[in-house]
Figure 1 (cartoon, rainbow, N blue to C red):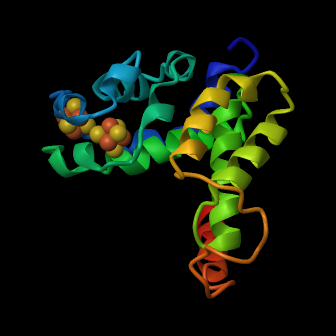
Figure 2: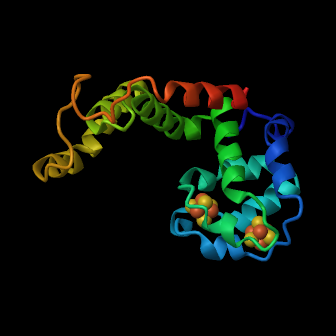
Length: 186
Ligand code: SF4
Ligand code: SF4
């Protein structure tokens, strides 16, 4: 990761650290996480690194990027800690810091949310096209070609680039919500 100092990283995760101050390291969050197999450090370990100011070790792992916000850990934490929100704060910090190893995740989220904001739902073809274009890498899409063809053949996705069609309707209804979230994040 190299160039970003531990101090700079610590400044970005101050709020996240505050959220887990009373963690007792019981491991219930780890035992509850359905995405644990994809993580190289466990949620309990993440909180330990946060609390001991090992921010570089924390950001050397991509574990928090694999959090799918299922809320199991939040519901089961005996200290009532808002762990899903804390994972979100770590994702936001990685995005703000423009860390290279999280660039794909950040671009993915952006393309996803742009599609939801525009149509009220995700339009898969448009969303993936925007995602691939934003990565400025012509090779990566080929890795998804066989999956895309299978989904097309099964009718799970289809060309839907026009603004007519399968949105939830009420264009602009989500605008206020997106504006409010942007305000809260400032
Ligand atoms: S479940 Fe809560 S108290 Fe237990 S390790 Fe996880 S965050 Fe800490
Ligand atoms: S909210 Fe995230 S970290 Fe918590 S159990 Fe679900 S996937 Fe795991």
